[in-house]
Image 1 (cartoon, helix red, strand yellow):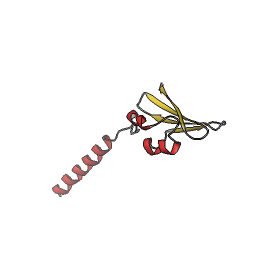
Image 2: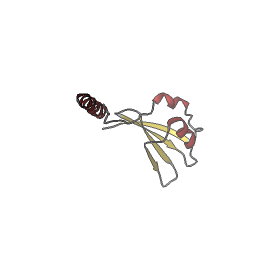
Image 3: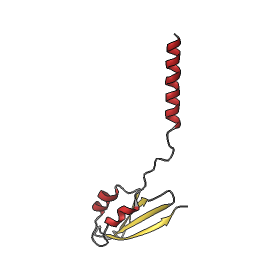
Image 4: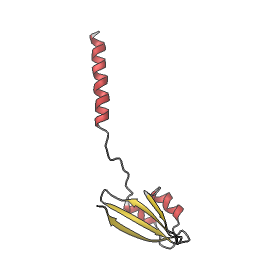
Length: 97
């Protein structure tokens, strides 16, 4: 009986410590060093997704251009602007509030 209680206490401690170690912010940030692989006027949307992964946000403009937004840190985000033909045109960095 005493050994059952010991095992129960150990199990409860393990469960509680597992819950306590879970991080509330599990956001994945894109490493900006990967941007060196991108070429303006050449890299396509699908190639960007292969290199950087899925964007955090996509904005498709009525004129055919689009912007992929990637979180690069807890305080910064980068917008990758594509032409109507889906080719990378520019990158703009922004600070988060």
